Image (cartoon, rainbow, N blue to C red; front, side, top):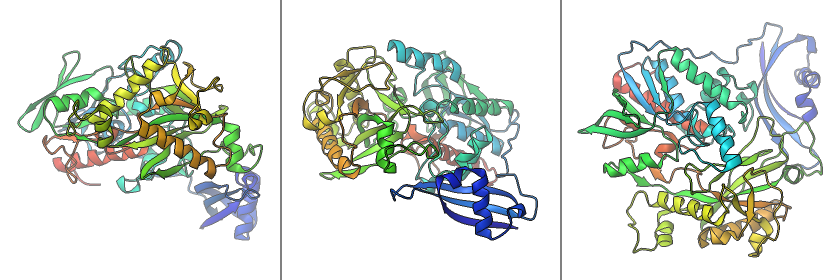
Length: 530
């Protein structure tokens, strides 16, 4: 017999197996010997009460019979070496990978064409960025096997429940090696130290079933005949033909947007957000969120999520990384971009988060001046994003050393004479961030910091450092697609997908979008819907 229980228990009861079993037996009013197994379904931390931090836990308990040890039915894939249809997927990030896996399930052959390197070689290029400030434009935090998610944290939380089956995506990650806890935690996280192996396992599975995964193949041209793409051409001159093409290039493939623009294929400027990374000592965030000087070691490092409206403009935290580090995320020399990530244990001494401000077309138009730009240019916000990144690079002292300012100094509009120790390996340089950020962003951030300091007492502190620029929050361009068929409205066999198409943000939402596009292609080819 299986019982489902809703528990509200102490951290010690939640994370000590003996005590947890005792709680279950008490709740069911049975002897513990009758419990043959249990499985956690959902789990979250409730720290609203300073004196009584509790773990909310939903659990299935089996009594008096052998437990079902299968967490779910594993997905199996078909051999597609002799498949009737093939699909070229440009980009090997979450959207591309999950589109490929879904196509395999359907019996369609995926051909992934990825501009970057495999995870091990890519790691060496990241080390070179951190140590020497040298950016490999094709192998960095954004480009390479697994896309931007591989080396930027592996957070699996999303609010996009209408986009697809979140649990299915989590189960697939688990099937390829992610820990059990991602299936029940309210904010699941894999960690940058573990995600690369999972991504590689996915590639090997695709290849083992007849799919193709080509690395270090940058797509430089798409050849159209009428309203269909007939050929995909790489920088080495190779040409590929397939029945459909998925564009899953991620938010930083500016050359793909330019290629679409040069061919006069439909594009749209898409509002995004831009700002800085803010880093605090993790112990400070723990003390604020858990209302105690020292965090209970049974509790995870604390996180936060902040959002405010300042003069009708949104300012909010983004990609918060407890126990993490700030990393360089530029994709070309001469620009400065920062991002954040955490290892699986989230045990670094600092926490960081993007703190960003909404940006629209009218903002970019005013920034450049009406005489120098076209308000209808679909690449206008991309050009704005790039201009701010280049400005940050020029203000820094080279080698990806980042302009930075103490949070309190920024709010008071005064220079920082010194900076806190920061996790950003290339290093920081004290500067006035108002020299980089447009006035509307700087002033909105300033007021936002004040409001956040009232929400979280101690958040606004001179122990916090602001590092410029956090600018790759999402794509500043959208490749439009048919709302039902998911194809590009001008190109009948092209399927814009994920973050690069401007339709998804984050690993899980991009993965779900990849599956949706694969389903649309399979339906077009007449494959069963299951």
